Length: 205
Image (tube, helix red, strand yellow):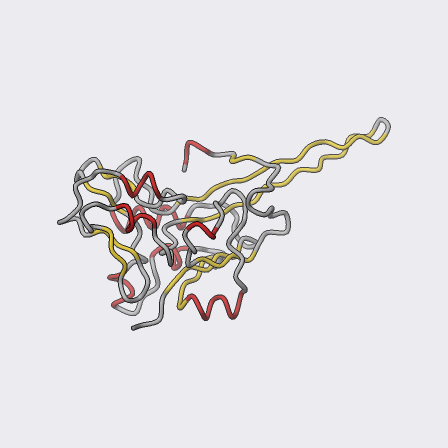
C-alpha cells in the first residue's frame, strides 16, 4: 500500500486572493456553482472602550478548503452505489459511471466537498489532481498559490513537519472524519467549537 496523501495549509500566509480556487475551477472546467476548492473568510471582534477612546479589537483570517481525503470518509460510507471510493494513496474520488446523483455524499460531508454537477447529473469533487500527480506535477491549487500557503504530500510526513492541527473555526470537528489536513494556524485562529466570529462570505462557499 502506498503512502496516504493529504493537504497542508499555512493560514499565516493566506491573503484570501482565491488563486487556488480559480486554478482548480479552470483546470477542471467546472460550471457555475461548483467549486471544489473554496476560500472561507472568518472574521469577528468588537470595539473596546477606555473612557472616550475606542480601540478596534477585530480579526479576519482565511481558510482554503477542498476535499480532505479523510481517513473515515463518510461520503464513501453513505454512497449507495459504491461510486465514492478511496484509492490506495488515500484520496477519495467519484466513479461517474456508477454515480446516480442522489447527493447523499454531499449531505453527509461536513466539509461540503462533493458537489452536484447539473451538467452531468453526477457528483464531482477534488481528487488531488490525480492526472497532474501521475505526471509529477503539483495539484493545480498548490501550484497557483502566490504566497505558497498550500502544500501536499504524504500525510504522515506533513504531520511530522507541521503538527496535526485541523480543528480551526469555521471547520468541523476533525474527529468526525479524520481529515488528511494539516493547518499552521493564523495568530487569531480560534479552535473549532469555540469561535466568536462568523463566516463573512457565505454566498461564495
